Each structure stands twice: as C-alpha cells, then as structure tokens.
Length: 422
Ligand SMILES: Cc1cc2nc3c(=O)[nH]c(=O)nc-3n(C[C@H](O)[C@H](O)[C@H](O)COP(=O)(O)OP(=O)(O)OC[C@H]3O[C@@H](n4cnc5c(N)ncnc54)[C@H](O)[C@@H]3O)c2cc1C
Image 1: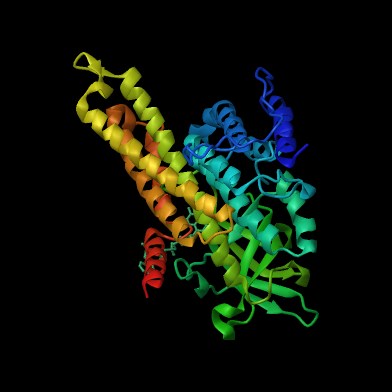
Image 2: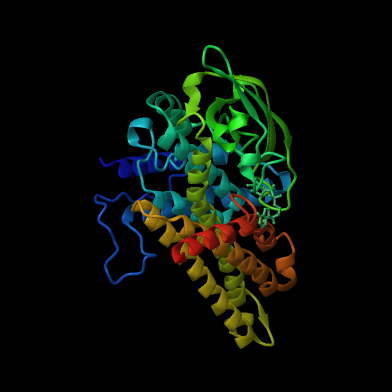
C-alpha cells in the first residue's frame, strides 16, 4: 500500500475509536490518480489531498466544533484533540513512512491546516507549527540519529514547538540572547529564555535556536533539538486577543545540557535553518488565514441566505449585501490561489520566497476583512459569542504578526522585486 493510503487506512481505523460511533465509512481509494486536468483550476487537488480534506472536515464537525467555544473560554486545547490529531496521522503529514509518518505532500499538509482553520484557527496553528516548522526542521536538517530518535515520537504523540523569538528578538530574530556554551566534550549548555512559543505549554520536543559563538554575530546561531525534561521550563502562558486555545508560552532554559549529537544541521548555521523554515512556514500561515476566512464566510453567508429575513426577504437578497458577499468571495479565491501557487512552486523545488510572503500577506488581510464583514453581515448576533464569527474576527489579527509581520513580508517582497530589476 502506498504511504498516503496506509496513513488514511489508519485514519479510517482510528475515527470510530475516537468518536465512539462508527456510523460512517471512510472512503479509501485504490489509486492516487491526479484529478487535475490541464483545463482545471489549480484549486482542484489530487485524490490524496481531497481525502485528507474530507477526513479533517468530518473531524471538525464531530470532534472540534463541539469544543471550540469551551476551549476558547478556557484558553486551553482539549487533550482529546491533540491525541486524535496524532492518532489520525495528521501530525506527521510529510514524515516518511519509515519514521511513522504519512509520507504525503506539502500540499496535503497545507490543506489540512486550511481545513482545520475553517473550524478552529487554534487547532490549525497547533497542527501547522508541529508539521511545517518542527517536523520539517528535523526531517530536512536532522542527522540520521536525530531523525531516528525524534521523527517517530513526533509522529505518534509528542508535540513539538519552534523556539526562536525572544523579548529582544522579534522581527530582528537574530538579535537573540539565548546562549549555547560549548563544553570540553563537545556537548552544549543552553541558557536563556524564549517568548511567544506556540505549543510551548504542551510540547515535549523543542527546536531551539541559541547563539553558540556570539562574537560571530548571527553566524554563531545554532539550532538544537531539546527535550523538555532536560530543563525547559514554562514560565508563563500568555493571555491573548485571539487563538486563545493555542498556548503561547514564555520558556526559560536554566543550564540545559544538550548532547552534541542534538545539534540540528551545521554548527553556526542555525540562522539558515530558521530563515528557510519560516519561508516555508509562511505558506502554512497563509493556509490558516485562508481557512479562517472561509469558515467565517460560510457561517455568515449561510445566515444571510437561509436564516435571517428583514423587510420580507432574506438579507442576502439585497444588492447591498450581495455585492459585499461577491467581493469577499473573490478575495478569498485570490488568497487561496496565492496560497496554492506558493505551495505548488515549493513542492516542485522552485524559488517560492516571494510567493510565500505574498500569500501570507494577502491571506492575513483577507482573513481580517472577511471576519469583520461576517460580524457585520450577522448584525447583533454576529457581535455575540453564540455564533463564533466574533471569534474568527479576534483570531484573524494574529495573521499579520507571527512568522514575520506584514511589514516584514512587504520588506521581503520589495527586496526580491528590486533584485529582479537591478
Ligand atoms: C500568538 C503568537 C504566537 C507566536 N508563535 C511563535 C513561535 O511558535 N515561535 C517563535 O519563535 N515565535 C513566535 N511568535 C513570535 C512572532 O513571530 C513575533 O511576535 C513576530 O515576529 C513579531 O515580533 P515582535 O512581536 O517582537 O514585534 P516587533 O518586531 O517589535 O514589531 C513591532 C512592529 O514594528 C514593525 N517593524 C519591526 N521591524 C520593522 C522593520 N524593519 N521595518 C518595518 N516595520 C518593522 C513590525 O512590522 C510591527 O508592526 C509568536 C507570536 C505570537 C503573538
């Protein structure tokens, strides 16, 4: 069985266990023949991607949706959601089968993030950081030892976090002050602290960036794989405007002893790993924001066309509403096209940095506009917590901040445009 189908077969077996009600079959396909023909939209996907989407969509409806409000109020992800994501094979999408992963495509990973965000952007970012940042770092830059040691637990139950930012190092990420002191036997001791770390409260495996040679500036930055019991302390969980169920933690590293074999990639080249990983990760955030926009749109448009009447007709029948709906639908389509264009170029091994930055920039703007319109379209009901579009509105703001603010995306795009003209 090809890896993707094996993973989906596992999903099919796990769903009844997770939900406790095997009342629908998971359709397993016997081939992975692409759906896309030369005349079809780039938004038509191969069967494996569509299968992942349909599994996540069912998972959203049955497991995530009933918990969204409580998780947001309590600012905490229900552990059943994390364990289910692992059991369904959604936490190691691109990890090769030999390490317990699905061996699926980057596009599949991105589609899962998008689909999860339609229901809960917090669950989406948990999955996104784990797949597109942590797994990717370990898979691409890990030695055989690191891959064998960490990819299987990252595929089956141990959550990962990506620890780069610090109080003094946000947009200027390489101004980090966490230090890695080299010992005489070649091992390291990490000392310092990190801030804003997604999954930080629940994670057991951390990709940590520390400067091992401060005299060399950013060329001293080295990446390490660090296990929580070695001394990673969660100092604080931030209380946030949006994506409140997703943990965002302040971490401290107090004399954390890290064996030399846990250096990720080349000593002193952690900055390259961070840049490359974040370039790719931005496509994941574009997916989160596109999914969020679609989730808010679906709820509000359904309300406008099916639920709410004023002046004797459904509010969606007024031209003033229809033009706004058409405008936002077009913007979501544009965001999605940018997203999957960037994913397609990355998947094919091309230069995708500008396209990824554009996708994240535009998707985060579209998410904010859509969620804002969705609240308006639902009137007073939209402003209450009952309908959850106000949650999408709060959740949307983060798209313009993490994995590079919108200004940083504009800076990247502008630099690459300039380069192509001089
Ligand atoms: C919820 C959340 C989750 C996060 N998750 C993670 C994570 O998992 N791992 C991790 O390492 N980090 C994470 N971060 C950190 C995130 O990546 C940073 O917050 C982000 O890079 C911005 O840094 P900053 O907050 O220090 O803002 P600053 O860098 O202080 O920026 C403040 C403002 O100044 C502008 N600005 C800064 N420099 C320039 C410039 N050169 N030109 C123009 N404008 C500029 C910015 O655009 C922004 O508007 C997370 C943050 C949040 C809020």
